[in-house]
Image (cartoon, rainbow, N blue to C red):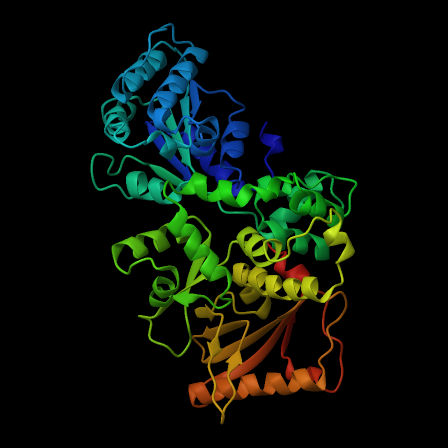
Amino acid sequence: MKNLIVAREKEKAELERLMNEPTAQMLAVYGRRRTGKTFLIREYFEDNFAFKHTAVSPMELKERGEGELIYRVQLNEFAASLRKYGSKDESPINDWFEAFHRLEALIDSKRKKGKLVVFIDELPWLDTPRAGFLSAFEHFCNDYVMGKHNMLLIVCGSATSWMLDNLINNKGGLYGRSTCEMHIHPFTLKDTERYLQWRGLTMDRYDVTQAYMLTGGVAYYLSYFKPGRSLAQNVDEVFFSADGFMQKEYDRLFTSLFADNAGYRRIVEVLSSNRYGLTREAISEKTGVTMGGTLSGMLKALVQSDLVSTYWNFGESKRIQYFKLTDMFCLFYLGFVQKNPTSNRTFWNDNQNSPRVNSWRGRAFEDVCFVHQQQVKRAVGIDGVQAEVYPWHATGDAASPGAQIDMLIDRADRVMNLCEMKFTQSDYVISKDYDERLRNKIAALQEMTHGKRNVQVALVTTYGLKQNMYSGRVQRVVTLDELFAL
């Protein structure tokens, strides 16, 4: 039902527009695994489809020991879906051309005013080696769908790179066939709050932010948090119990996204240990993945899948691009869960105020702010000013210490916002030592820019800044409430 869809206002409006179009439409829905793509389509249309099929997961086939029969399994399941929606043909399907011909016959048998909606979920999983799927699908779209004016074909996939390369950016037979694309991103902080409230979980924004640090706003992960339990109790059950769902999710994630996923995992695991990201050359050196098309293609796929982000370091050539792991779940799993193996089923509850958990919170909050940089810019008051955002770092030497800045906003009006992130349970207090470090960062920036930028300090923190003799160093304080803005 539509009232079960939390947030996604733009997406719902786009689906309504497509339903009112007088001509045939093809919608490609893509995005990171578990963000609610299938849920959105299924609930919006209330399962009222002329035909719906979900491909079989490669992980499921692997667990069933049917890896060599994957092509036949996919065809058999497609045939079962055809029968479910009214096909009377009981004979086996020999290939994908025959499969789509049967789908055409099924759709033609349905007489209905308004749009006939056909939904094929996890489309990339159907494109198995030597199956000829893509050629058959191209023929189906070109010869049938585009001439069926009352038809809306929706194809969906978590393998974002496949969706973009073979559908949206296709230069061959499917060129221009996708009339609309919909990239389903993880929730923002505000959407995460709305979702948790809808599910009956009572949390303040401090805990909602921690839930976001753990899950990255991925709806399916958040669905495992149970009402009536504290955040710590939910984290222990989901992440640290022996049978917790998230214990196997890291493997599932990469298996579902990439057919040959070992190289992708190496890249992500290397990036997880480098807070400020790595250049293409450094990634190649550390992973053993050769430079050139292979590495470029893999990095492109990781960026398209919302796992990795790119940026340039201020003061360096724009030809030097950095890749930074920004998927919050991967960061937490690789940076904390794997590094802290435990059989203690109440580990998180017992260590909420430990140095290692507090240290993780501090780093994770920086990542949350990086993902919500648009909200930070708006809170600083520069939403309409052209600006580049960097997680800036500079190496030092004996004469001049290096500097690391959580977020640097370089503005077109020749002002730089030096943004520091502090995740605390009360108003942040600037100490003498921290004030000294802050002054060193300002000096490093001024030296880098030769005094051609006016440096202003912005503190992004949970509740605010306590006034003392050092607080005047900060020109703008951004609180959690401002990060929760839409």
